[in-house]
Image 1 (tube, rainbow, N blue to C red):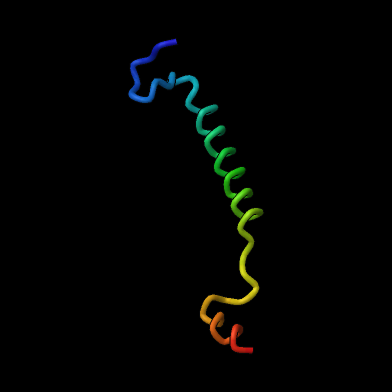
Image 2 (tube, rainbow, N blue to C red):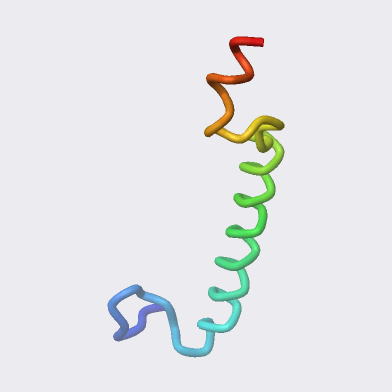
Length: 52
């Protein structure tokens, strides 16, 4: 289906598009959190932790 919008998204499909984009953002944030967990030592204390 063709539309006259720049992104080729029909005006009636905008809600579904936005919901899908937000779902993708949540999945991406979850993957980043799972694959790159936070450090147990703050970066400012890394040099002190290595000397121990």
